[in-house]
Amino acid sequence: MSEFRPTSRTAAAALSRQISAFAGVGVAAAVVHYGLLVGLVELAGVHAVWATLAGYVAGGVVSYGLNRRYAFRSDRPHGEATWRFALVAGVGFGLTGLSMALLHGRAGAPYLLAQLVTTGLVMVWSFAANRWWTFRGRSEVPPAPL
Image (cartoon, rainbow, N blue to C red; front, side):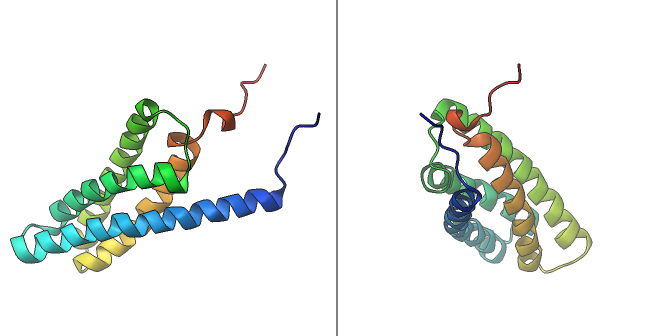
């Protein structure tokens, strides 16, 4: 019996579906993140860097469950995926704080513009790290070399 090997066309279609699902999850997480960011800045007078970090954490909670189920369709046990996701999110948290501190704090960009740029940067990091490490199924891991 021959082993199934996806063609480049099926692999591209699967990647396209995954990116689309990741973007959809990202919209849901961004609504939470940006909603908290704007609310804290505009209504509570919290500095934008601290407000965006609070929003990042809240959006991350939404992101984990939806990405696990819809974007990556992961079979990795929660015990493994959760700490991996937290580590990837921790790096994203640091990137968010640094980017916002530089763009808004140092360069003086409006906080929402700085957050849009930051979101793009962190989104690329998060997709790559979660796809190839956090949610990668056990069956997708290549065998160790002999």
